[in-house]
Amino acid sequence: MTRPNILLITTDQQHFTALGVKDPVLKTPNLDRLCQQGTRFERAYCPAPVCTPSRASIITGQYPSHHGAWTIGVKLPEDVPTLGDSLIAGGYSTALIGKAHFQPLASAPGSESLECQPVLRDLDFWRSFNRTWYGFEHVELARNHADESHAGQHYAIWMEENGLADWKQYFQPVKGETSSKAPRPGLKGGYTRADRSWQLPEHHHYTTWTGQRSAAYLDAHASDQKPFFLWASFHDPHPPYTVSEPWASMYDPADMEVAQVTPGEHERNPPHFAKTQEKNPDFGTWHTPFTAHGCESHLYPIHELKKDKATYYGMMSFLDAEIGRILDRLDDLGLSDNTLVVFSTDHGHFLGQHGLIAKGPFHYEDMLRIPMIVRMPGKVPAGAVSDDLQSLVDLAPTFLDAMGLPVPGMMQGVSQWDNWQGGTAARDFVLCENRHNPLMPHVETYIEADHKITVYREADYGELFDLANDPGEINNLWDAPNAQPLKTAMLQAMVQAIMKSEPTRMARIAGA
Image (cartoon, rainbow, N blue to C red):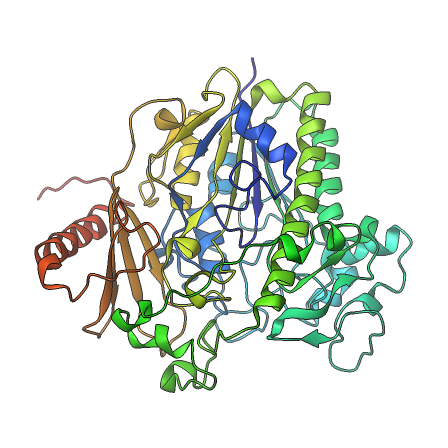
């Protein structure tokens, strides 16, 4: 048998319960099938609850504080060693199809970006783009979510090649353009569209593109002597909440159950939590001159939230169909038995939990915890469910270990390969960083099996939750007198975890 292939499939901003096996209202038969064929990890976490930092951690095996892409708007330096670099050196072909988001939407000194306008719309540039980028020898990229104006790149080329010459009309206009078919912004600005049914035909949607092009990559490399690493990176169910038919109408908003704030829960939380429940909150310097995600009013009509969730579920079912296309193609090509498949997302999402509807400096399980499924016939137990802790920062070292390749000391994650095969737990804690805004305190969360603590730089407030007895995270114990011994122990454990996770680029030796 040749060396195994790797297929990483990710979504964007998927709540850990947004799977058919977790919610029978949601139809995801292909992901359910993947669960039956592999192991579902119930306690997987992101290293940062925003896109760029978390995605950069996937390919570097480092936390944002070390790889450099510490928030959205800051690029991952292109000289940072990546998983793809190690795989190429080990004889692998590497490819990324879908969303990258390693670079910002606007270039700035030190964060010059290819993922911004006007480069996004320079289709000749993308037609000729053939260099290895962040360890990927083959890239096909799209940057937008739904009808956002930053559409272009390889996705726009594909739309034109498939007969949609007027594709720009389906997206929000950039400066100097007009757009007649894109939904207009509705409630909550960039997150919700008044029209959740997008006029863009399903067969021209980027979800179809990602699935179709990923399957085409498998076709092209099925008979290669070299094994491959393919990252199929889907864009949804990230808002804005609008999607093509029939998916936009697949779920009835009346059937959607949405969570709400528990009266009084934010009285024990840091002050920015309660501000989200005000009509016109003042977040002070957290909002000036930069905009911090989520630092706004989260008050929102329940009937609109139900519509959003119905659209979100429609996006998930659409994704599932295209994921099925990829998995079926693996089967048809005879690749399934020799391919390690991992499914996950970059971070979680809020759909009313704790009264929140957008990501931000709110380190609840809804935002940090993510779905994760691992499959490899004959290696990974089928039909299993595990509570062992996982982190996206572990993917790079685990892939290398599973392929028999050395793990660079600069990677801070741990190999989960033995654990994925049914072995003992590889870690007893998870760390999550959030440097969301230059003027917002750095947030650090430490999670262990039964408890969780969150610390804010230069602040005397924080969060401490007993996950075993308070899984909904309603009762913040930070200031509770009887929880002070636990708080002290958790703070000490957090410091030890941070020290334990430091990278070791050079071997740990010392001498004269």
